[in-house]
Length: 372
Image 1 (tube, helix red, strand yellow):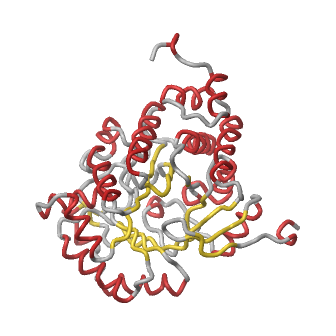
Image 2 (cartoon, one colour):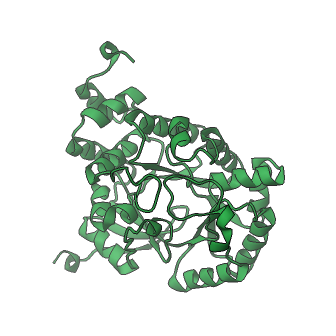
């Protein structure tokens, strides 16, 4: 787009205030020229349009990484063990996973988020057996598991289509698919940070197929490394386009790259200002998404709750277990339910515990004592 054809910041703001859809070029103008406070104000208006009651949700889940053995060698990952050194890694048995799910249920959790390295020793049978056993013992638990790269790998390993793999897993208990493995959904960036993972088009194929089969999924974005502003907006546009076609995404979750024990430790960690601006832009641009999540895991709880004033209506999860970010030596502090509720109340919102599909399970109405 030429400079003469570009819209001024004032014109873009006028469109946002009228709740009109903005283009990629207009999104770039907002990101580059808009102040942090302006983006926060505009994003907050969009949040209130979808959530006028001031409810902010969170989920109680467990992130089980069934294996850390992986062949993709992603440059941003501190968690994996290369396949050639697999004796240093692990694969969880069915009983080990079931024990973790039992603890999740005892904790009052509803969602099992399960992802792992791409391990050639694990075929479709491993997951079919695992999901069957989980659903047999814990039918109330929602299995929100296996990212697009894992699904694509299984399809290639078993010589099946992505649809056949998803149908098989759905039949044995897979309820929804997380948005992991997205990173930045432009092939230029993917070739730099995760060239051995599924392509951008394959990531979208998995999610569109899941939506067609009646499964809900989430969309994510890991930024703060080698991407440009254009890459971020391209990512948002492609996600918005798919949501227009299917309506299958429940939420969008942006978070930042965490250096430490990775091949990308030369990258300076993204600032809270950058995080909040991208979070706010996500809320404004993704006008067909009801839910936007703020990340307390990578941003600390202090910044996480600030994100609630920059367009987010969800504060992620009270996780019983987290291994991937912790592998960078970043100290992940997972709050208890009581701490999550208190933080949301102090930010001026009504906390609510939800399930995987954003159905409200428990509302925590504030009292005057919460503000003393």
